[in-house]
Image (cartoon, rainbow, N blue to C red; front, side, top):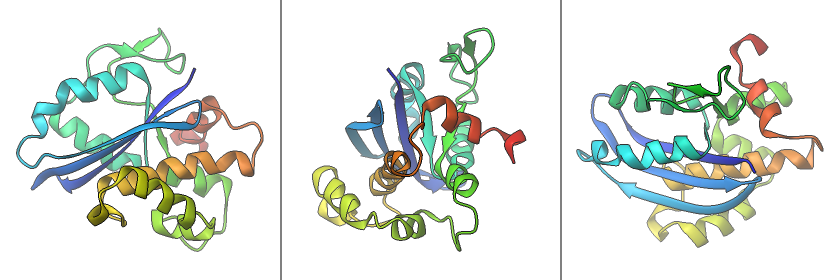
Length: 182
């Protein structure tokens, strides 16, 4: 069983994280979603983010941003499972991460843009994204640059890959995100 938690933060290091969205995927299917407004209270969510990292791999569109913000608040999650992707079976890192921007850049060379909204448009995913947003987002949050909407869009990009590649797996996605695979 492969669990992926797709994360998106709104905010920055200086102003803080104002909200987060998380979409939990199991075997590439969406199993649940959560959005929280948390300006000045993000530190209260440490146990939640630790539980995410202990139960699965983290993913994001431009994952270095989410990783940086997590590490700014909590440099390490402590000893967490490596899920077979880290020597020794455990790690003290928030990663490895699946970065949908990097995955699409490596698999679909030559696109004009790899920004989240442009990939959704390029792969005709507006309709499925709209359906997911109606199910999980409040009406005011059904657009880009809202944390849960963006997390849903990134999850949809992961779900879209088997349309083009029959052998997509968690291992392949993570291998595409390794720095030495540039």
